[in-house]
Length: 204
Length: 282
Image (tube, rainbow over all chains, first blue to last red; front, side, top):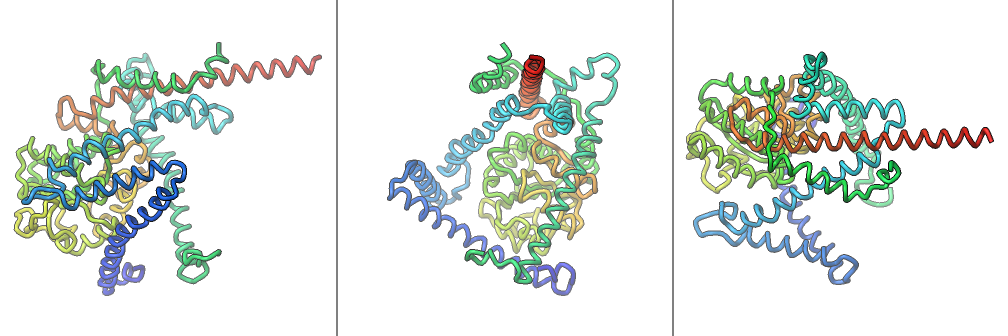
């Protein structure tokens, strides 16, 4: 895959391995489902603590799978509007996902009250930056800012976009990205050269 | 008093936040939404597309983040249809497949876009980056039928659609992996297609280096990005604009909590210092 990236005549090699990758990935779905049944099935049989949740997971998986694979109109698809699978997706899966994601807001509010303190100079910088981004990147904040005498003429949104997000934030993100990429190259080389073998299993 | 506040049960915070979020949804404040530079750049990029241009749009978000990504996807789709552009939609996330269908069907119905001529939905294919790489060779090798199982080769929109070179623009709505980084690496890096992106507010900071480098031409971030685009596209009473008011009050509430927590912290610290110096004097 790496070679074909640099040598164009070997492009077919990349295409071929990509196809292999897709096939392996498809089988991974099947393996994943089997593994789920094995792991959770064992817990249900042994009735370990919280086995009810394991049961809910397996029942949900089976029911969705059955409706997704077998129950749909003769001249249609399981994903068509109005099918049982569509109903499960819209009325069970979507609200559950939205609820889980929305819970974050409550935990952020609680955590900000419990933990966000100006204990050091660094924490104060973080606090002030968070304040600016949080308050003045929403319509209410912008409205209040522009109503202020003198400072209200200064374009706070452009400052946040250009300096904080496009400047300090982008520089930090780039550093993280470069660091992670160098780490990835190094670990890949270790695997290719046989130095790193822990992925094969065993103790080290 | 401050001590009592410091020990406040977190359930009171949860309740107050719920009230702060619900109130503006029930009684809208009518706050103005002013489009920023980035949203304008996004809008102008689409305005500059010639009529009939083909755009690939990827819906790489799930139901959890739908509230942030769907409004911008919907607004941009409607704008593209009004500009008489043709849109080929895909998704690299299994969760996104039904959401993309719903968004496309609604926008197409509203703008009277004809399925198969003005738009098509190819559905989900697993493999992330590998799918993008294969689409660079031949799209019909990756997707032989559309999301509804119809043959693609008979559709007018797919007649001259071969690979990434067939698209004037690629737009990705994403929340992580697969997402903007994959598009930058494959579609931008290897096939040199211009990319626009929209992400959740949480993931937008990660995409900024790509914007600065010009690898992503413009970026819409979170509900705000969606709201700004709704204003630019002239969509009245859009989902993002309504949500932005609730987000505004929630942000102010969190800011109030942070201030309150710091007031308690410094008052406590001062008290401890006073007590310490008193003990030393004794």
